[in-house]
Length: 358
Image 1 (spheres, one colour):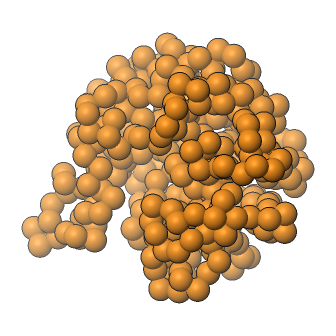
Image 2: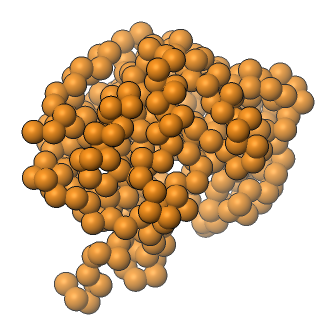
């Protein structure tokens, strides 16, 4: 059996294997933010198929932090019951259940009522999704969002999740603070890597104080950025060294450009920087991006990764964990049509049958 399917011990969690379903937004959430029956069945299928840990799709910690109207919420106690069912389903399948919590910042897609919200970001800016200009956050805004993360983490604990993952990647709020291409603030929350890390650090500090020293906290972070990426490598290494001080359960390393890299046929992208960081810190590091078979995963493990994450392959084949354990390779082509196909054709993946063909 591949090392991927060996038991692994983290700081506080023991996983039955090293395969992680990385947090992945699905199209099955309703406009009110509650967990749907389709989402429960999706998590049941994934967890029942040889996965060591399932990280759920990001749940927004405040109402205006909702990325697109169909995202699950964790900003109110009314969401605990549904999320508790998700945690129970995942754990019943033998996987550890981790909830990713997030704030979209200025990256909000239009949805009914979104134009009535005050979007928040490090700087005043119209982001790519273009709902409206986000407000540059002041100290009161930061306190409000920080409290959202704290209360969201406490609700995840109450719902029975084995841990949480705080989203510092993929262009959402905390990632926006870390990114010098976006964060051009000239106060103590900008200017250099130390300043750009200040607000994420305040969030992590507050969350750690709220959940206690032993509750597992993961983070997900970009290893690169859109401009002056060679210079950003120093920022990334600084961020990793600072994160190492929080007693984290693990750091999942990603990047902003996973879509074009996947389409190019690349494998194990972001591994070089992830490996360099893993060698420099004590916190377990794991990789997301471009792993489609056991050879890809073994290459990552040999380079110092502790776990191996996948996202799009679980969209293509929710039972991919069992298929990998049986020596098969993911059929995912990394085309990323899963971002829009459900709305255009009623299916999540080009490998799935058209609805009328079922």
